[in-house]
Length: 300
Image 1 (cartoon, helix red, strand yellow):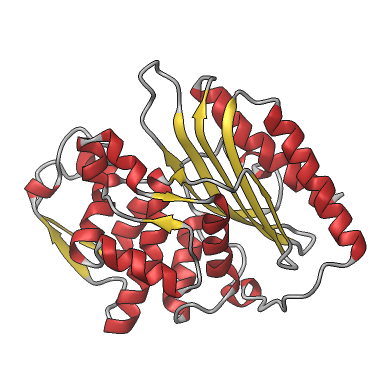
Image 2 (cartoon, rainbow, N blue to C red):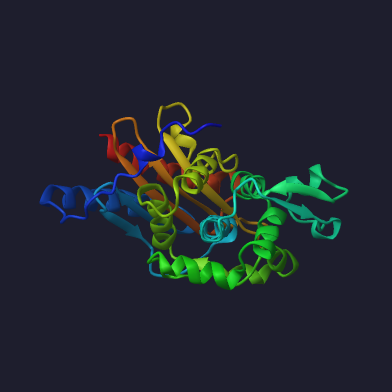
C-alpha cells in the first residue's frame, strides 16, 4: 500500500522542551490509566509511549523483554545504513539458493519459491521481513547485508541503548531459548521507531521506503493497529511473536509502532508482553486495549 503522508510531513524535527505543568499532569493521568489496566491483566507487560513533545511515559520498563521479530525493525535500519554508505540501490538483487530456504520456520518467501534459485531485490526481502515477518528473509539479510554484531553496533550509534542483538531467526528456531539473547526495554524500541519517523536518518529514498513498508505491515492487525482500522489515523508498526510456553501459553507477544493522527498529533508506542496466562486472542487484545487507552487519552 502507498504511504498516506509524505516523508516531509513526517519529519517534524520537534524541539525538546520542558514539560508544562498541565502536560505533566496529563502524562501522569495516562500513566495511571495504563498501570490500572495492566494490573488487571494476567500477564507481564511493559509499555513505553513517546508523544509529539518528546514527553515519555513508561510502565514496567525496568527489565528486558525478548524482542522476537521486533528484531527485524532493528535490522532494517542497519540494512538502510549499509546500503546508503555503500551506494547500493534497494532494487539490487540477491540470488537465493535452495539450501537457504530451510524448512519448519515461518516463511511465505520459502513457500512461494520452494525450488530456490530465485533472485529477489533487497527491497523485496525487506518487505517480506517487515510486512510479513518472514524469518528466512531476515536471515538472508543478516547473511548478505549486515551481520548481528554490526546491527547491534549501528543501532547504538543512533543513541539507542538497553537492547542486545545476538541471535538470528535460525538460531532461535533451532533453540527456542536463544530468543532470550535478543532483548530490549520497551523504551528502546519506542525510541528507535520514533527516530525513524521523525529524524532524517537516511537519504529520502531509503527512509521513505522503510516508513512506507512499516505502514504496510500485514501482521498483528489485532494488536496496536486495531483501534485505528476504522479511522483516518495511520500507523507504521512491527510485531514480534515468541514460541508458546511448555503449558501452551503465549510468550513474547509484542508490537512497536508510530501513529500519526488526523488532528496532527503523533506518537510512538511499544507494548511487550513477556508472558501471559491467557490465550493468544486474549493476549493480543491486551495490546489493542493498551493502544486504545493511549489513543483515547490523546484525542480527548
